[in-house]
Amino acid sequence: MNSRLDLFNKQLEAYGIDVQVNTIPCKALIKDIPNQGLKETKYVYIPLGISVTIGDTITCRDKKYMVLNIKLTNCYSACVVEEVYHSIKIKYSWLNLMQFDCIVDVKTQTMIDTSYLLAEKTLIEIQLQRNELSKQIKKGTRFFIFDIPYKVISITYENNNIFTFRCEVDGINPQDDTVNQIADNSQLNPPIVEYTIVSSASANGTISPLGEVKVQKGNSQAFSIAPNKGYEVDAILVDGEVVGDASNNYIFQNVSENHTISVTFKEKQVAEKLTIVEQDGYEDLCKGYPNTYYLRDTTGTNKTSVTWGVDKSWVTITQNGTKCEIGFDELKYIGETVILYAEYNGNTYTLNVLCTNL
Image 1 (spheres, rainbow, N blue to C red):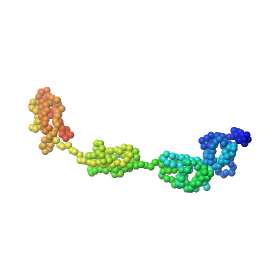
Image 2: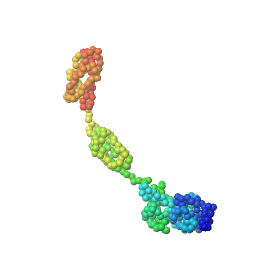
Image 3: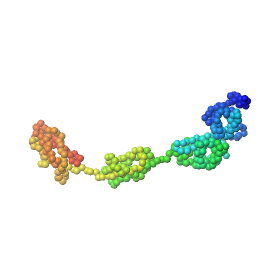
Image 4: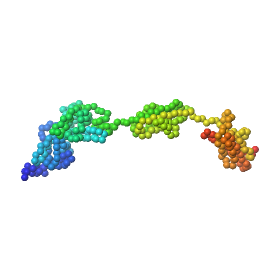
């Protein structure tokens, strides 16, 4: 029979305090270690069934303590612990943000509401558990403590289970996330990816913006095209290929690569001044007497390849591409107006003809 173990178990049952060793809950006996200045250190007696090692975290009454030393007996693990006031966040990669509880030792520190406020431009030493994750911390690794960025300048370890990092104040870097206190946080502040769109325009018009245009990945970019007076857009080429109908604007959507855009202009095609004329100069259409019509330019030249038409079904019409002949034969249509159509080169020309009996 182990009388010391029995005594420990009785004291544990009577005076034990709920604690958590890393993530494992248990009861423990706790005793203050006096005369430690600003440091809060204690003895914590853990039952043998609970695994505990140097560098582990023991949580008690919403306070965290780091195990600095352990003495094993046949009744319990006697741990020397110190309260942990700080934690640091270290970014290993875009997908791996780690947070470490640590003890900070500085030459100048002030106690306010049980938290140490660090003096700027002070060398500090931090202690944390030595494990596979903390082994990734190298010289030059940066972190924040209370809005101050620090950089590791040397590394030692004690008892094979605790790292001691000597650190100095460092400056703020562009990739530092000062809101979340994460140094070199490229995930929350990823590098901006930009692409270039090069625009150009021929003579007789403009494109805006002109030249090299930087566009962030995923954004859109619009270009406005303005022909000079008397000109119109001839073609828009994107990456060397003609796109869609020639218009006065173009938008690149969801940009994910470099592009080129160029626009050319042409002189506007002005419709010829053409007139429908009757070969003998008759203005009206007389019942029973067809009229013959031509589409004529200002030089007196009759156009060929003309398509003719009228708006009344009771009007007879014959045509050969150069001229047309129309007529009507019933008295009831006297006084009606017939619209004669001539289509040429995509343009339509008209003439109103009055039906008479004279």
